[in-house]
Image (cartoon, rainbow, N blue to C red; front, top):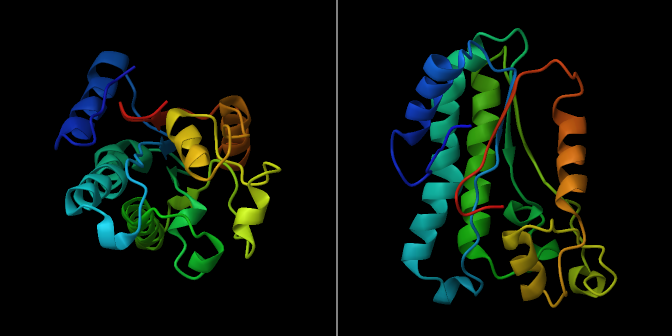
Length: 203
């Protein structure tokens, strides 16, 4: 196991060096960037600029730094994949279907969605895409679904906080269900070398 702090520049690069020197890793078939924070709930007018910067540092810049650091190992794989754990709350086109007050979080995830898509097109041999760990379909009558658990946040500290902000007792999707679902989409082959990175803020 290696440690990465998304708020520390160079941390991802140091972690990759450890993978190579201490663990003998020469390639990575799949990298899953799972770092993320959602620390503030409120409308854009009252969102502190410090929260916006913090969310961009962890959710967008940190994930880009991870890609840059792991690229030499991904490039060595025959069919490399880079995946960013994102959210439907980052959608611009379907924003009216996700009326949660998460301007800092949503904007930072929209940024990493763009960056991930750009990475995909700039590297023909790489598959890169964002994925939602839970529910990802926009709902025009979003708030009507809170009560029956159709909004499927994942049971992490952050997911439960989001569910609570929406009036739910807890997120309905277990961590195991989320992990299994993501891995089924990302790496169906059992012999893949997988690196899933998460930050100290996340479960």
